Image (tube, rainbow, N blue to C red; front, side):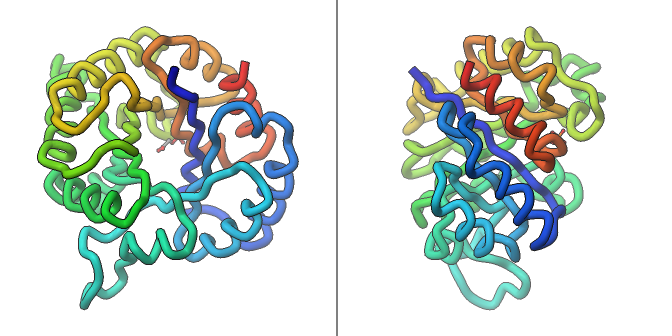
Length: 248
Ligand code: PGA
């Protein structure tokens, strides 16, 4: 049985004050005891978030890491630095990184390798664009992203995959539960063919405009093991409602 996982991707949002308020409401909420829960703030907010979450069951992750271990890479943050700070998770290959920072599957693969070596649990994001879906290429695109990021990795015991159709991120459009389930099934069968992955045990999250009112239907699907939540993770009431749907 896979434990559901709900991860808040705060993206480039928040201030020290807003985070105090948001986490103040989250850490004491009883719903947090249901599924596994994590939040991923911007790098600069990690120490504050780690301190506030220390008293709760909420895990903390970063939204990215460098593909290198250390060295002359100005502006980058290394996976071992995140692990030393106390992070448990790291989101890798998010479509906004692929789109705005030209991240390739090869680069994502290098990041997965350093993250796993540092003891972080990678949340590897995959997803097709609207054009690719309309052209009937969605499954092919997602499978290629998985293969590119995961084949040849030394260890993938802690892997989490997030299926995030690009056309659903921040748009208010969500894949229907059936569309999402179909893709999650495809992802699981693709994972079966990748050495080192226990496809049955690997959690596959859905992401893309997950809200309180669509979360329960998504979580009812057999291959949807939680959510990667953007916009709705920034308000305690909205995020808690999604967590409660996962706990039901
Ligand atoms: P959204 O973002 O929930 O705001 O669509 C999800 C994500 O990008 O992880």
